[in-house]
View (tube, rainbow, N blue to C red):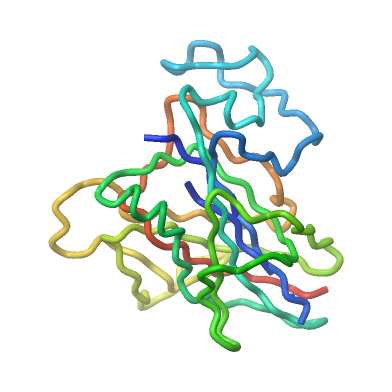
Amino acid sequence: LQFLYLIGGLSKNHLTPRTMALAVAAACAAAGIMNAGGVPYKLSNPEGSTKDWRGTPGVYSTDFEQNVKGAVEHFDVYGEIRTQYSQVYWTRNTPIELPPALVERFAGKSMAITGYEVDQVTHSGPQNGTTTKGDVLGGFACYPDCSEGDKSVPSYHAYNHHYFSWLIGGDAEMYEAEKPTGAPNPTKTTFRTKAGTEHAWPTNIVFQENPGGEYRKSYHGYPSGYAQLIHSPSQWIVEPMQIDT
């Protein structure tokens, strides 16, 4: 998962005995666009609709840097999945630590996330700081990225039916709800701000995809002047529902 954030990110996740990862990235300067060369978006927020509007009327660029006023950076997070043919992986991974440089940089501050992209990949590079221990899977994060050598997993090999993921800060805590959320994709994973927190900034954000693997590489971005804020970002948690086809 790659998150993009306004300087002042999220990241990629991975999936394999086929080991694969759900990869996420967040917006940043010189951030690669996963869907480069794809079908262009032919809709746009009208010129002047936001204070710092940028772009070409009638066309909304998927270049994260063009749509945001100011410098942008990104980071990647990978959530590991291991499956064999016919297996379904539907569980919450061990929390994934964000890169120390980012955690230190935004300690006591808020990060403005301007967009993100997601893919399923096989990852052959390093997994620095992975939280995977044996058969208990977690993942790792990179800043700005470690995607060199990543290969997209064909949907006929593995299909991501849906996923939940959360970016949380140091003032958030995870707990199990008494009852799962409703259809179509239930979960008991829930987050809240710790008691005694003295600021009012968001401490956790949920990112999820319900429509199926067709979301892969699609553009998720906000118009200039808008962002999702997260205070003291520290971890990424992912709960994928993956079908090995």
